[in-house]
Length: 394
Ligand SMILES: Cc1ncc(COP(=O)(O)O)c(C=O)c1O
Image (cartoon, rainbow, N blue to C red):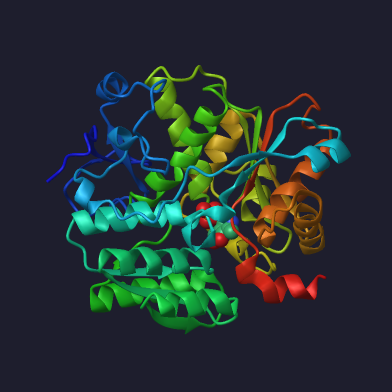
């Protein structure tokens, strides 16, 4: 065994605070709340000198002291994370905001930020001796779990909607995953995955239904802090489905503040969804703490077609606490912005990234951001897997 020097201590429920042993295999808490990972932050702060990163990995495994894996042998990595923060010279000029940055997650293994969460979940699954992983997915998370399970020598079963863009199916099959296609949305896939998990002993790595995907996603928050010299931007725009990234970054900011790495000034967290599936903006507008179910979800941005999210209350809490907001954009708006990202900035994004830019335009129009603000626009996945969809909008 080669120790990672992790300072992980135990697990806790984000709803009722029940504590769980770090060596136990956990899904949701008995109360139904998502379970999160805790650390000895005092110890971590002593172990990590964030100003001297020589020899540290140029990946999401940069600070293993605040990640949940114990043994380096269990780290299953394809080089995920540590993605570029690209300035936006053309679009910044068009919009009169000189401090726009794109967090370019398209360059991750398997083409999206899902590599972070699933890389972490698969690593911990390996460490805990889990052998079979099942996932309900709109596409990108399926590709990621299939690839990381292949690298770890684990089995995977990917449950996707029937109308999933073909590349997600093809690469998952190439990675050796078993596939089941389901009529309906990711919510229907979730029900089917839960049935098969119970009947056949698969371990479900569905969003926030196990504790570790969020630990991978939180690394986006650590990276932003490092890339901005440990002062955070003013606004973060995040295309939201299950919301792991948003919740993960908020956790990262809490952790860094506890370790004394940043002060209490937080970015406004902005969740963007599509008009045809907007449970989070609806709940935000109605002042609700939970989002409930969105009936008949439709949008070309497959990753945003998430009609209900188990972590809705955590997202809404973070958005409100940060002074941020939640907005919906139309498919036409998000696709126009997907084109603009490619044509003006050379970034070939999936429709979800287009949604982030479309959201920024709305924030500018409503004067919810200032031209002097430092704004991070998340481009969460690449366009290559959505060629059929993109072709329709040429
Ligand atoms: C490219 C892309 N962006 C955003 C999302 C939404 O991510 P999350 O479910 O973490 O909110 C997804 C989810 O599938 C996705 O594939």
